[in-house]
Image (tube, rainbow, N blue to C red; front, side):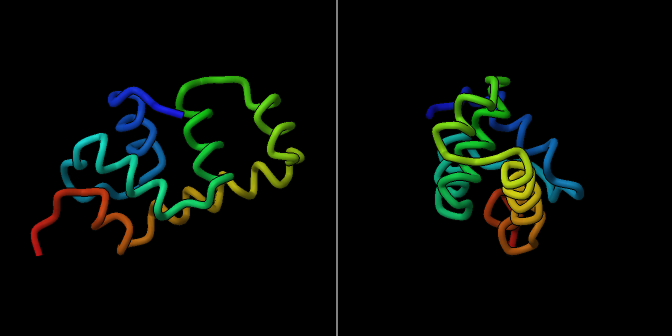
Length: 93
């Protein structure tokens, strides 16, 4: 699943509540997301960011609506953790 760079940046900015500055390049962001999110969280995040219908993906991943929503919340919480935010942004120190 490859996401266009502007969609990836926009999706991350929408999920982070207190940005720390400028985001890194899209390739680095994708690598960080793959490393920090679970496979299901990552796939849901990318599909949602691209605006694709989630039902086929949820069926493929064997998720019901409640579990998918829990995974979305979990991904948002992870992206707002300070240690992960520092990885996503070009932060000095």
